[in-house]
Image (cartoon, rainbow, N blue to C red; front, top):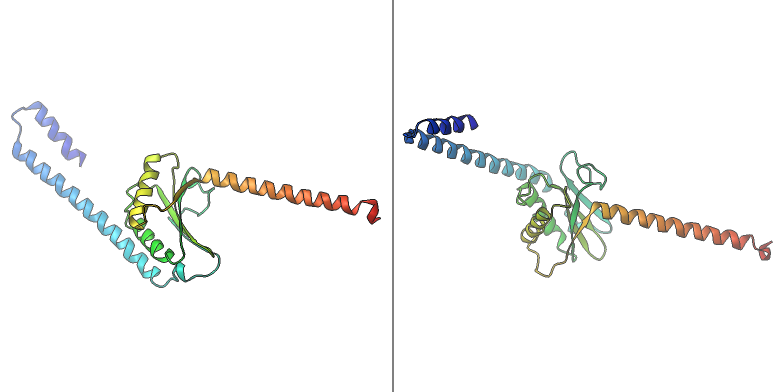
Length: 210
């Protein structure tokens, strides 16, 4: 494509008279190629959705699950872990749903991801739906938490594709914050366990128990 454009500009620079018919022909060719590329992208997205739907139609829906369950849908090569290379600098949008909405929202979300409706390039890593007793939680993970423009676009697209009410609370959490929270929780648990063991030692070594 560049080899067709640059010689054209060179000839116009060397000769002001130009060849306007050639210019129009090249423009038409470029427009045709652009339209063909767009058609290929649309057809590719359509095939992805159709292929996925064949498998998804046989899967149990999140709303039909009971108890504590998680569904993960991630791009090939990306693990649903904060520490994964594709995730470690990223974060996730979190939406808490009342019971009964998970199946519809999850279906709309994964179709939007496969249909590339978020328009953020390779930023989307995957999505998770978590079924809990009192509520259900949907989250979508992206690569770059510091890119506020991208995270804002993902948020706005989420509101649209999930048809969320304006007052729906959406929380963005970076994976580094999640890791810090888990580490702090583990530390506090260890300290509590240590304190409990220390108290037991003091009690059972007291002369009263001798």
